Image 1: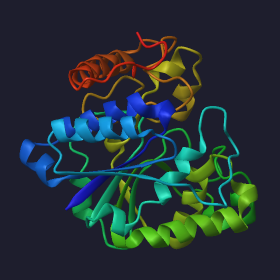
Image 2: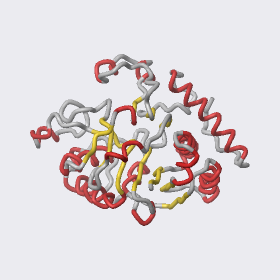
Image 3: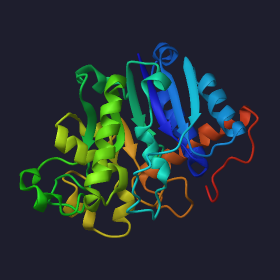
Image 4: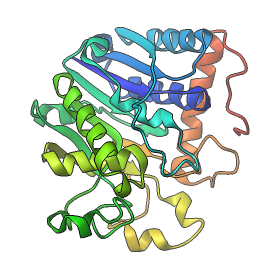
Length: 295
């Protein structure tokens, strides 16, 4: 019925493998057998692609496919400090490639702790499911979409969504792609957060969004509190780890697989998960795939 979509380049090979295993852990064995995994990449080698395929099979997924792809020609990288153009590949999934009625897109810098398929039950065919962004929750009251609320005052106060996890009917994906391309072509001056701003411009214009509960894309904020207190002024919840979160998202430049990342509770849990994933990878005969500097 559904496929999980990942966009992976060589820099995110190991986090992608960790995300794959987390997705498997969130499903029952029977659900895994009926689920698919689809990967889009710019630069993974044949050996790396085979590693993904072998791990997906080992973890019990019923279907796997990977495809080389290039992103939208109209893409704009307003912020490339730690994000590459691979981020735009999320709009290149097609119905013919997915071969399932639903796609659940997931970023690679996540720790999956439960079943991500639940929101599909309330998703209408013409909607994109998304979780409100915890750092940029409201149009006109955050850095995202600079100048948009001044140009279109009726948008002020509307929700702004994070693109790290998305739920879609595959029939709806071409409309999303066209909407994003329109935003990148005609409203480029309002793009700050790259593809995520472009997606939100489309969602604001179309109204085709299904808000999903925050626990399905919960930001890990402890790393930011190690550097300052601004998170307490922005995030309207306790900054403590949420044990009920289905997915923990490590947004920002500091990633849990990096040795210099603050060892918060969620980071330690991610590293424990990653260590188990690497044991599985080594059992598959892969060597030399550990990220540089990982503890």
